[in-house]
Length: 306
Ligand SMILES: *[C@@H]1O[C@H](CO)[C@@H](O)[C@H](O)[C@H]1NC(C)=O
Ligand SMILES: *[C@@H]1O[C@H](CO)[C@@H](O)[C@H](O)[C@H]1NC(C)=O
Ligand SMILES: [Zn+2]
Image (cartoon, rainbow, N blue to C red; front, side):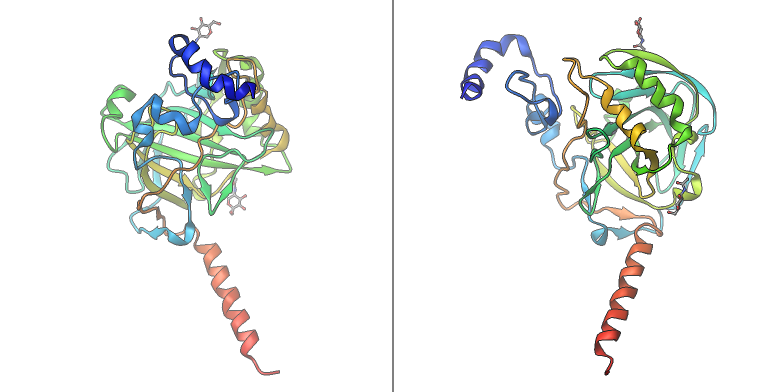
């Protein structure tokens, strides 16, 4: 009841002092007044447009595209030092070196700007994209912009100015040593605006080996946080990155600006609105081949006399 009353009164009382802060669904409560995902279009009208991200990828509706060839990476193997920061919504690491991606039917070469992650609660479901309704525990976004731009703001004015590479995580029984420095760094940035130096990291170290990056999905979408700008060419890789339970849980020790646990940092999936999701030649094929085989065998078994 108090919540109901507040819902009516507080917007009037606080109108002038709260502003238009956006937040995730886990932060919405009677005493927070921030705008959760269903209100983001009030923060930025673009969040209510029709090519929004993330989406659920229905593999049987994806369209095979032979042009989705393997990517060409440069600088992904370079080791660099950077700042990792709790920005109040995620942990973000800027990329101070030149690392680029091309190929894979991208229009031109894109350079890496930053990476950040989205996660659930203590290793529970937390990815932004879902595959056939399955939500993975976490998702990595490596944000790139066309090489000719110098500022992300400029790239965001181009409908294909930004390319985000998205990777899922899956829980594994053994820890992923390549993530040790990164997950240890989280301890130093528990509070919002906290930052620390991440030393001797490379992009290659964070993602699967190139041979495991040939299976992916492609569609046109948006940033998954306000302004929700529709300028993103999305690539979502099928092969997840393994982290053990403890490593996944480390992300839930970060805190939002109000000191509450930073959990559930994902936007719910958005309508596809007739957009086509393309798949590279090897994505989802293995699974469907097994299914087809299984049904042929089943049919054969059923129709066989005796
Ligand atoms: C990191 O934090 C320090 C204060 O602790 C601040 O002076 C510095 O500007 C911050 N750096 C970044 C990149 O946010
Ligand atoms: C590469 O993919 C194969 C097949 O899905 C998987 O078994 C293997 O663990 C992957 N390797 C890495 C390092 O992700
Ligand atoms: Zn993201």
